[in-house]
Image 1 (cartoon, rainbow over the protein chains, first blue to last red):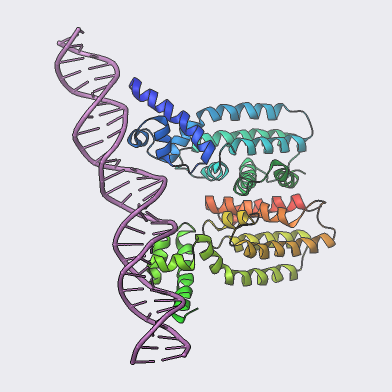
Image 2: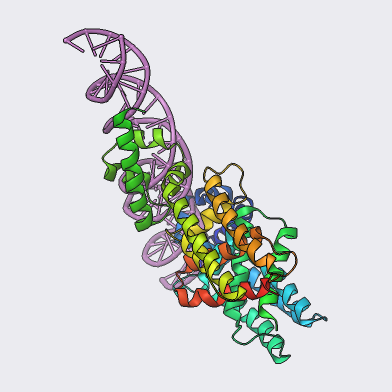
Length: 182
Length: 182
DNA sequence: TGCTAAACGGAGATGGTCTCCGTATCGTGG
DNA sequence: CCACGATACGGAGACCATCTCCGTTTAGCA
């Protein structure tokens, strides 16, 4: 990749991160281009679909996921505390920008999504948490990581759409946790 | 209202119901107008916002909600069966068209939504189910109807976005139910 | 039947998405 | 060091959906 192309690419990603956080996932891409000081053509050449841009943005997000997972697994406490802790971390991770929870949760099952690999990192993280609790015999039969992703993703989506404060989200996560624990 | 206006109004609602079911809530309104044989101006005069059209469509839906609630309350069986039965009915009710679950669930907490009153009927229905189970002492402390709407709405939203079959939704509803029951 | 308020409907403004292609730039091989 | 071909740029504009404005038509009453 040519040096100028590299510069533009990086700049677009950086600006897009800002814009998406400010205005949500539906923000006009032309604004991203404008703020990045490039033409729309340049933006669309690098990122033919909106999701491709999202994918690039999420590179650093993946690192945060890994880090957060390690923290959640290292946590002391009852299985309930660990599970709810993970739920809250999960919610925070997918709620970095408006529209994120719905986007990420539905990409989870879509083999054609450009952000699929990123979501699988998150699914893998849930798997690790589920595995650990399962070894302790803390979970009911049939509970799996995909269910965690869907249920917590659903709660986060509702919270995102309705603008719920964390205090209202917590009890919902508790219900889900209690439904999974023995 | 003049007779011709009434005719157009009814025809638009009827067509919109079809179109929304076919193409989801985001279907172009101009197509609704075209199929209804009116100009876009006519459509927008009757229904200034997309949600106003939705509101009109939901008139008959409200009847279905009441009917379904009665059926759910009359149902014999364990509290778990009743609760899960209601969850499934609830999911079906809000999933009549693509985008419905998210729309209805987020309208639930928005005082300015044109479909608020419709959603309150649904919230009221959940309230009746919760009240009944609560009297039997079947629910954990702190569980309320709003939580039911949010959690089941979240599950339905995820299912809608990801196109999940009923068989995959059921276990999610079971987890939620188990988290609410004693 | 004639009149007026009401309703119609379509042309077009607006705003977002995305493409095409002439222009500018990079960076390499001579 | 420079010339040239490959690469990238960027903006004009096509396209599509939303929504409005206003000249035209019509219902329905007196």
